[in-house]
Image (tube, rainbow over the protein chains, first blue to last red):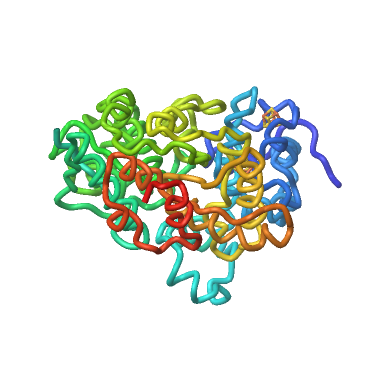
Length: 134
Length: 289
Ligand code: SF4
Ligand code: SF4
């Protein structure tokens, strides 16, 4: 793994994520409170605190290939418990937006079961489409 | 008293019970929910990233309409509440964003509306003491676990209807109906939300933890204020019974159905029989139906 020390190039992924999310990953001191409270961490290949860590050290590829952003449910438990006020839900949303804008979706719409469409409350579909599909 | 009311998409369809039971109960408490004369979907999720101003246009239209019809607006669904409240919070503080949205919507929202969740209406405009006095059929001996979920509590500074870690508004409300309130640790955790779309396995795990926590606290039923929470919780009971032999499926319903019952509403009008696990047999056993 290559880690760049010193100034980051302008316009790289970290820069973009910071701009879109309005969050500053450098505030994080890796206490792990976010991950401890995250109800979806069990399904993440990268738990929330590691997502922030990888942003700090500029690991674009690992961040973009991770599934964490797609299983984050935007519940804000991480933010609620972060002693530094880092809102990871915004960082996850920024990662999704960057990925969706590149045309990559979080789910395959064709694969959705029909009774989900007929039985679930509309908000499940509206929320799901807005978060997971470009 | 009349209060402008934003139902949102689900309350007219899958969550009809929620809408009807709330309207009827509030009428008994002297409040008429007056549906906005025009409304659209709020968008279901608040755009989390601040650069996404356009994502605020749908909820801003709702607020704009509400502003023309009163100084407050109430909503029942936790998702709608969260989106409207956060949008309003942002637009009250971001003049540039407000201008962009008003230009786009051809609207004139000024940020003069107070968004209230119906639990806040019950607490602040009616008062739980008043509710208690109006109860004609106390729900004695019903062990009820209130489920908050995320949307009523987080982020605390923008939407929190109560303390974000140790809320009591739901418990206090249920106590006023005479229920045996069950307090359990997972009541503020997420049910899995939109993971219902394609990741049932995750929902089943996340909602399963909540149900199990309520069960361990001695609950006989769970109440919520969100159609998606209800959907996820109900559908996670069967898999949980398989995983945890000690767990027995329990009814999940809207808190307003219990409110109606306690206020003396007729059971037939409150329970349409749509629940996966019908609460009526249990309520009948307790002599409440
Ligand atoms: S809780 Fe906050 S400070 Fe702690 S690891 Fe998570 S983001 Fe970093
Ligand atoms: S918002 Fe996402 S990362 Fe944060 S606690 Fe919830 S699921 Fe985990």
